[in-house]
Length: 255
Length: 151
Image 1 (cartoon, each protein chain N blue to C red):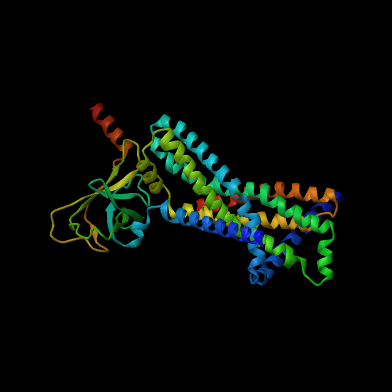
Image 2 (cartoon, chains in turn orange, green):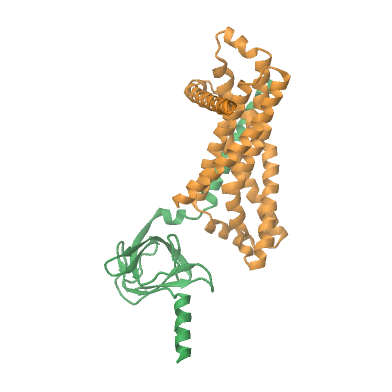
């Protein structure tokens, strides 16, 4: 009983500390944005370096969705719905979720291990001694870099995915190019696009926050840094899937 | 120095590509903007709208010229009031145009079909279509058929 209580209060303490850390990041953000060079470097690390991975994965995810949609819809004679089907599933679900998972694996781990290693090699303490706030100098630019990169990565993933399903649908399966696009435009509404954008922003904040938090609070040993990296991927994946459900439920109840 | 330059180019290219993708998604994948630009509203009363929903197409001669904006129930005379947004380009529709609820294909979604009348006066914002034909409900049809065949 007592252990259960302790585990619960420990969890709440971590959770509360995470919220405070998040607030701290937000409060310090304007100050860091005044020095865009720090942030743009992190946009390069988190975004530009993930670009090839995101594009390759996006293309093949879109292609496989196109293939599945074609083979299943053809049974009902509804092949012309391949366009809207793959566009909607990419825009609303697969784009944000898979990009966020890839982002956790590619950029999140890099952030966590980088900051964790700084902690382990006492670089963060050294900064404090030089009266440089490590949250401002290290954590906030990395957090902002992730938050800025994520929606852009999701948009690129979705566009490349649509190209992938187009390549499967039109040249490979012999659908009509005009019908593919007109059905796609007919089936997709502004609300669908916005839902994807909202998801990408939320996932960007969650993924970057978790990575920076895990790195910043890593146990300063080689094992601790490794642990922080693993936890980043696991926690980000779980949190993103939960948020995905919540946002989808809200979007559907809105109408 | 060389390295900073590469980083800057990479970041710039990434951000530009990202915004291009966002722009593409918001403008090229939907075609609702043609109706965002300008439309006028007309209403019509139906005894039964079947499966008609908000955003169902409104078409004339098979061409989509607008969409259903909202559907409300009028408790005074037990009819459904359907408000439609018609593209502002089509201002010269006669005011005795009649509206009927039709089905695309055998089990497809329902839409409002308009048929031009012969009046010299045109529909304008807020007009009501007086001649309407309700949706055909399959169950009622089958019911009638069974009653008739029993006689």
